Image (cartoon, rainbow, N blue to C red):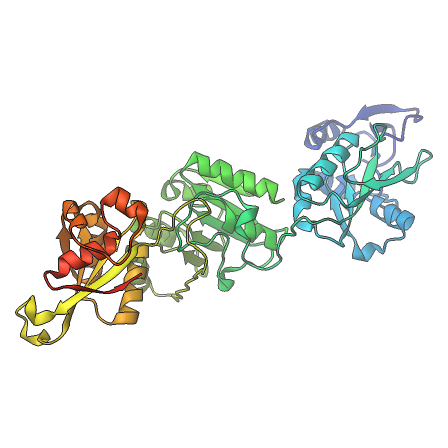
Length: 483
């Protein structure tokens, strides 16, 4: 398609005396129209350099090399930089005329200069509102209309002021970014306030990828049990060529992940809804896998059968059972197993929710006064009692028990009120410890060192943990520790 008997319309070509067709929106709809002109001489008029955020890249993949020729002009970016006196190599150039404007989000931080191609005046207003919402209303915006043409016009104003209502197309904007808005970090560990999330387990800080899991440019991630999408989003933020597919069985969480990705400028995150084991075959193979939820033997088997050698797998093991499953799987199949743990000194639950870490207490008395066990005569029987909320995970009980053991030595028995028994029994089975059951009605019969008004109202005792430990230890007991 070389000379010019038919032209695809451009805003500056109104005086051309030839057959003209206006390129439609969305852009992809015009490609079949152009290809239908094969055999005729066609010219497509575009602004600037067609291979820098231009139409050339999209069209050339549909044409043979001998079918097209590009005649570039100075790009809009070059013209804008020359008008403003900005060093082009120090500017970030973005083509958002056919892409979501939220893709600007990763590039917003004070002191950065952006040159952005946009669709029209309405897109300029949408971009200004977006930057205001992100906290960058102090930025300076320069409107660059019809650069290089007879109607060229350049106007500068603040983002947070009223925009003119006569913005002409074609238009680009230059942004000198300023304002108190938070910049997205360049290192792993996206802070939680950037995301819309659900309450999380204390073992899973949002947006944390082990350093060995981080991508090279162009790699693809499978994020299984994607939740808020934090892991996949960080993967995509690491490089613009990266790809990520999230697997999420809950439609509400899938929608939340899509919204988070769009708001943070990585709208190309793909979310597949359903059981990962059932739909893995629908996705292209990954370079790395993150299992954020739903870890099971069936999932590990499915991954092992499908994935090629060398794929990196990181699993979020929030229970003792899942840790044991990974260890057993590694023992069977080999490879390298690296255990990483993150701890946070802040309360484990989000603001407005109680911590999910349980209360725990240790009560003790002479072992030979309670059990006729000659191997333990003269020692202290130490019983760990627990009090916790219904949504507390097993891993939190295990963490509390480990803290008691570290401070006070071996624990010989566990204790729980009947209403809290199943989870403590599960911990007992994992740790090979007997569990003593205490009737809920007996909790109010012992005096505790701790006096929680909430616990007193709900359970009739100042501390469930202390009460069950003391009752389980038997007569003459004393409380050794409470945490």
